[in-house]
Image (cartoon, rainbow, N blue to C red):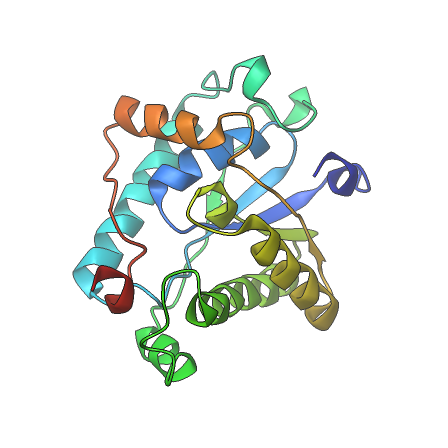
Length: 209
């Protein structure tokens, strides 16, 4: 991740966010080293009320970080270099469409796949592709995702999908494995500190089942 960011004098990153708990660590890992936008594109979340509540929690988290620039990670938890010029930046939350019908269309025929199977790969591609397109249209340098924080998700697969989309769309992808250096553990601690809603499934009806 360091190497990719160092290619830019003033990197601007649009990060796909799956939820507030995962974003809690990922945003802190990046907010001192790049200008950040957050893109909550998650058509896999089947219930609109669930989708809206998770989005409201994400926006609440971003408001907390924007209002207190002193919130940061301990040195041993950092995964990237520090650029003090970004410490006081305001993280931007972009508007997103809710397209649950597109998720069902893309995953048709894969309803009975096990977790971490082909359906999940299709879902990752759908969400990262939309983020990449939005990032390019909005003038960001790179796109990224919080999905690699989860110990239940294959970071290598997610990064492979991200790199492939990068070549197709024409915008750089920021590879990551946010669960490293106790990233997942830190996200749990931050979620408790800020009283964030932590869901017990990814959002799709197949996972909930």
